[in-house]
Amino acid sequence: MNYIVQAVILVYFVGMFALGILGEQRTKNTADYYVAGRQVNGFFAGIVYTTSLVSAGALVGWVSQAWQWGIYFIYAASAVTAATFLYWWLLGRKLCTCSRDLNLFTVPDFLEKRFESRTARLIASLLIITFSVPLLVTQFAAIGILFNVTTGLSYSAAVICFGIIVFLYVSFGGYYAVVYTDVAQGLLILLGVIILLTASVHRVGPSPQLQYQQIFPHGFVSWPDENSPITPSFLSAFILLTFFGALGGPNYIRGFYSIRNRRAFRQGFTITVSIVVVLEICIVLLGLYGRIIFPEIDTADNVVYYMIQSLLPPLLAGIALAGLSAAVMSTVDSLLIQCASTVENDILTKTFHLSLSERRRISIARATVAIIGGICVFWGLNPPEYLAFLMYPAWGALGLSFAWVFFLGLYWRRFNKAGAITSMVTSSVTFVVWNALGNPFGIYHIQMALLVSVPATLIATLLTPPPRTETLSPFFAPSKVP
Image (cartoon, rainbow, N blue to C red; front, side, top):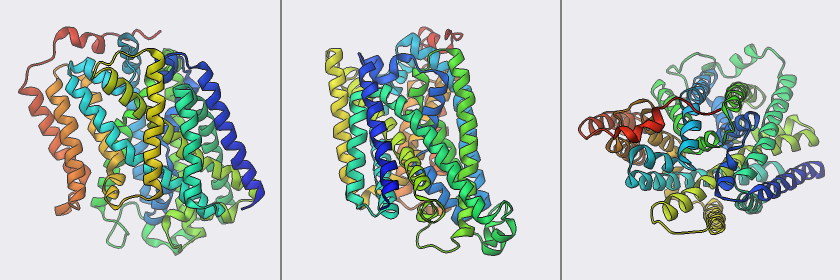
């Protein structure tokens, strides 16, 4: 491994650890640990949201899919952008308001307050942990492959070292550490993507249409045809999957809980959408340029790694690798803090009513980060075969399970606890079972989950009593965020 690349990666990891220590110094209570004292400014909020959204799956998996499919992958990228816009526009300000008024720390907090249901809280908590674990495992696997392919470092060593660094800064620094590190990582992701795309354009030239059409004519179409590597039905399902994955992910909600005021919210909204648009365009272009530079490769998932190796000098390669590492690390830390708050706040404190001091609560949250992280590292080293059926649909299942709960809970007064519970259960169970069955009859998991969950949610809501008026007041009152 080139020593310059080693040095860049080492500086990056040391920097993340130092920012984690800074976060620990600002953490005095559970509000600090879970939502950074609700003092996050707009710039930080926008970057943190974006880095939570843009994982290794986006920077590695989506580039490889653009390489495999062609130009029409832009539809999936557009779905993520549209979902991000709707998430901020329709949910953001309302969640900022009610989270302050009701002192909410987590998504299950929101569910119990909105639906007066401890059952809804418990189901949401179990879903979050169940689907977050496979998502975490995929991130650890991605970092292992990344460093093994590009630097020669063993897969196991990469996973273990990466895990130790993330566990330390998240467990001690809490959400303050997540904010500080994610801002640095977000800027690094953006820089790394721009560097790699610039190098690709320099290698191929600014007008690659003719080269691309000659190399991969089946990808130079606006919609899949009979010669395309995927079917129109599959692309439609994938668009829905990415849309709902970005629309309902509970790990993105914490960013709204932590925003300082209305002005910060507006700034965060603008920054998030702008960066997501830029990143999605860059991701698609990287896949298309990658096809020209590497028409044939052993595994499509390795296209980004090969581009870094062949296009960039050591210093820039180190920065690009750090950017990919940042994409993984920023997703892992948001999922870990989500799992910690779910176990400590939602299950132990709010469901089982354990009487714990502030210091004890933070200690339990830190232990949860270490335990869940350790489990995910172990599975990442030797992923069991049965985990595969959860890894790929986990993001979509998690998003779909909560999308209706968020949007209907904040915009439909009649929506009640029966509807919320039905929505979460039918969405998640149908998604996982249908995927395990192999998506029979040409209907994909996300499509079947929608076909089952939407009517079931409406029927359950309309056949049961509406929520009490006093319960609805905090969620439908005018915004009080200054």
